[in-house]
Image (cartoon, rainbow, N blue to C red; front, side, top):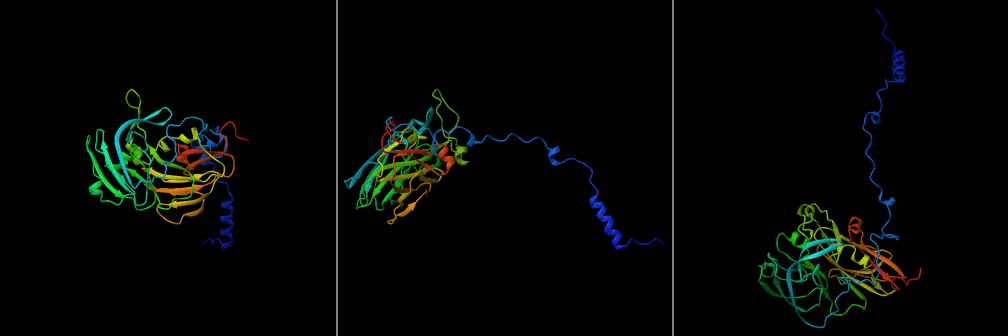
Length: 349
């Protein structure tokens, strides 16, 4: 009867097998198809502007602008009669891009309004459009079932409210589907000042919003809302005051060291605004109607349907971009420029 291999012999056999080279069947890379070409690296492509965060070409402050960002002046009236007509127009979202917009007052966004705490707003909506529209004031405390009802074409509706809380508030059409009415341009900003005036400053109103473009239609190649893009949170353009890169092409001129106050409303309908001024820190950020501001803030989010007040100063001569720091949105047009100091062509470097 043959002897069983000893434990030592078994260990030697296992060691020899482990050292024997396996047949060459090739590596996974040998059998896999060649890798696809790597996508282009944006960092290797020419920048549209020579400075940090220059997400759009920078124009001059001397060029005329269709929609100045200057805030309306503080009012001394206690009763404000506001009449807005709803009309459909062709709106320039970006150079060469026309959009079939729905509007308050024939513009996107609608006109900036301003009242003081305790003031009465006597509002009338007149519907000159071919479909129902309505009005929703975020600054109002009122029964929507009474005031925010649909107004049929050719009809009108009036209601009143007293502005009780200071801040900057969105207004918009509330007709269903609300997303479509907002995405098509029916929104604006209402500033409610505290009774004691804020410190003097250069004041601006910015309304951030998005556009979701369908295929060109009609003889003028105007675009309409792409509902699937809107539901998929995939805007083609993100804008301040209705036009992509408007205040990059037309920088906002300010003085060095001058107090700046920005009333920012985020109309959406989907994207958060991560507002930031490159090269500056916000001295104060007022969150809706909170009395005590946040101090020393670099970036602060404005939710969809929200509004914030930002205060800052630009410490030296130069160009300062302001953006949504969600840079996909900045790349799509949520970018502008402050030019501090001398106008373009006379600045020192």
